[in-house]
Length: 381
Image (cartoon, rainbow, N blue to C red):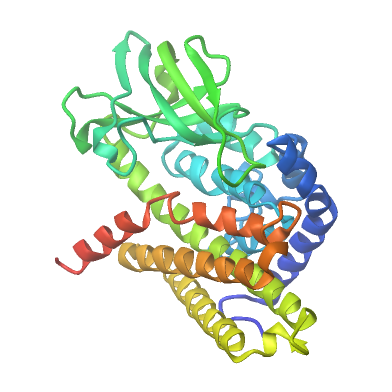
């Protein structure tokens, strides 16, 4: 039985995405991990299937679906067996392009959103800086008006898709004082003079997604590429982060479930002292505990997704879902690796990859600590 938020159409979509992932993504996981990235062609294939625009309006080439379709996609991308693939796709569909749909002009939607949905242009979201991560108000990248352009100076780091992106939604400061009220978003295109990829960063996990340090040095951006309202970027990006966090929670639960499934499979096959290791009470109980925690996280994600779909803006519950889901997912992966023993610690095992990749989910889109601060404030503390 499926969950009540999912209709027969959602389950058909799930089957369709799963078939695509099993055919076009999973067989190449090891190759892409070793190479440090997957081909841009993957975006075009996803776009051709309609998977990059599931919940976007048909007038821009989307499928016109609801929020639950994004949940389905996030869950099924875990089947790619390389967390970086799902991360790169979700940055594109759920982090960089939603602000263009909500705040962009029709011209911006035609120039950036439409080709992004087709997979013809790849997007990135550039927020984090060397001195500004969770504290968005501390952003220092400046944008100064110069006639019909803005001149950007500054740098960004830890930017997923940064090496390959055709455009990036960049958070800048348009008021000199460090304050949340002086931030503005710009769409900066690849090839713009003064915009360079300074470095491809090496990560512990998520090897199949590229992560970059970006530099803006007297980078002239047309005023037509200002996204939303000047000095309102903080509100725009805080809205975007909520969707990013809930999708991240959904993907984390799916990854944790994958790790648990592999642990159960291995535990029932691996025999020690005359019986399978899953039959030892200590292991059976731990597996049961992780199954329970993951189910609780899944129900929390689905219940919160229902509220989003019905027009609510449940910041507290999204933060709860994000911190709880990512923690239990990593804990499940950690125990799965332990159960596998030395086999799990070998680079050829899927478990070690899940272990490394799920750890990142507790940092990206808001650390555990930031989520707890948000929850505390929502509780009036």
